[in-house]
Image (cartoon, rainbow, N blue to C red):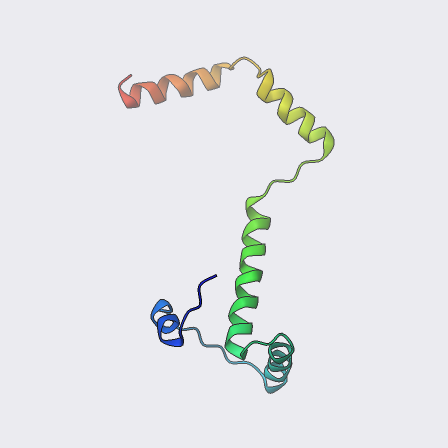
Amino acid sequence: MQSTTPEAADKLRGARLEARISVQQKIVLQQAATLSGRTLSEFVVASAQEAASRIIQEHETIRLGRAEQIAFVGALLDPPPPNARLRKAAATYRKQLGL
């Protein structure tokens, strides 16, 4: 892994984030940062990034139970024939595209 100088790292960071927190919150965050061998800023940014990534992943992932998995795969492998409403929507779509 390539080492980055503080000057180079500053150039990569183009945005600033500020937050008002209580003294107690800062003490807890500072203690956690110290225990993890990071500066307070490094700790807060890394923690926020991890939380954001986790939340995004949770919202982008669909979890299905066993019965739901079987129904989903069954519909993919052997889809039902299109009903009248779907045929009409497809015809409208094709007409809009000029097909």
